[in-house]
Image (cartoon, rainbow, N blue to C red; front, side, top):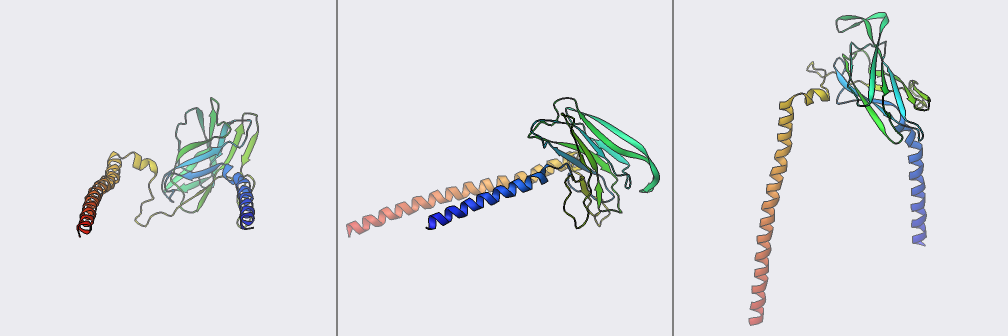
Length: 247
């Protein structure tokens, strides 16, 4: 009886787990944007546009990302991605914007990646890194509307903005969450800043190597002590046995 109850519970759990996977899987298939490290207000950051392939019979061959014009970015520099051509579109702003003491009349409004090979095949995703800044200080988020084109000419428009209190839309636009600037006046640092500093990398490797060496030495010492204690214990047991026999 208990075995049957356990079997039923296991089966119910398996069904529930399957349902969770099926229901939640579309949420992981959106085009998204995430910073490498911190995207602090007023600073610069490297952000990755992550593009998964949602189709079983077509490849993603093009990505168009529209940059916000209500909070234009003075600097937008894509990182080269093997197998993709990059086109940067600049446009005149309808209304000049004051950004960090500079009057912006023109800004990057779109970056387009076009595959010159197979693109993103079914079952894979690709990241498209872009260095951006200076990030605005008067908003908590930046919305990047994106278009994803497949090899069968299908276009998925990731342009729907999330409204507070509503459910997530079917095709949500990528949203970058901005962190607060640090109290010491610095605006955070991106992953590329650390990678570009050889001294930092050397110090980091040294600091991570030290504990490993120390733990190895400790392990060896404890191992030797354990062997010695074991030998002494065996010898004591043998002597005690002989004494009992002699008695």
